[in-house]
Image (cartoon, rainbow, N blue to C red):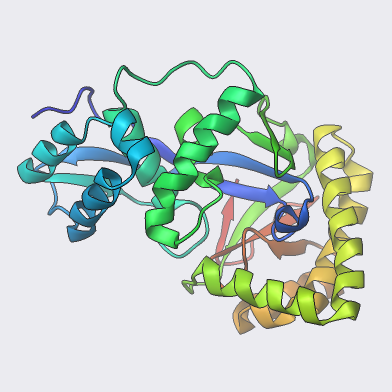
Length: 294
C-alpha cells in the first residue's frame, strides 16, 4: 500500500448563500459539512473505472502533470485505489469536489504548501477548477477548495475569495437541510438560468433584488443579526420561490410554501436547485420529516 497517510477524510460543502448570485458577480458563503465525507483507500472497494479516465486527463494537463505524482497515482489505481464516501452524488454538496481534494492532497509533489493569503487561495482554487473540470466540463474549483482547506470561504466576488473563521450561524436560530430525494446535475440548471438571464429583462430586474438580498443575508449572518437575517431570509424565500419555481421539485415546493404560509420556517436553494438539498431556516425547533439539522 503506497498511500502516504491513514484515511484522511475530506468533507462535503454547503453553499449557504450565493447560488446563481456568484455567477453574476454577487457574494457567496460556503462551509465544510463534516456529516458527509470521504477518503482514499486501497483494496476495500472496487476501483471506479472513471479513476483511470481521470488519470489520463491529468497526464494531458501540463499544469497538473507537473504538480502531481501521477506515477504513484497509477500504481495505486492498479492496487485498487477507491474513494470511500457517504457524500450523496447529484445533491450539490461537493461529492466530486471532495474526491478531487483527496487526490490532490495525496499526490501533490512535496506536499500541500501553506495557504497564507488570498493569492495562495486563488492559485489553489485555479488548480482545483482545472482538476474538477474533468467531471463537470467547467468548474469554479470552489467545492474542491473548501474540502481541501476544510475552512469556510467568503466569496466577495469572482476574483476575491477569502478563508474565514467558522461563522457562528447556529446562534441565529436553527438551520436544516430538506432532502428532496431527487438527484440533479448542476450544468443544465446553470445553463437554464443563464439563458433566462440573457433573454428576459424582467428576470434580470428581479435577479438584481435577489442578489441584493443574498449579499444582505451574508452580512446578517456574519454580523449575527437575527432579526435582519429572518426578515431577509423570508424575502429571499418568497422571491426565489417565484423567480426560480421551475427549479424546485414538487415535494420541496409543497414544503417551501407551507413554511411561507405558516411563518414557522423559510426555505431557499442550497446550491443550484433542481433537487438535492434545500436550506431551511427557523427560529424554532422543527420536527418536520426529511430534515437534517446542521
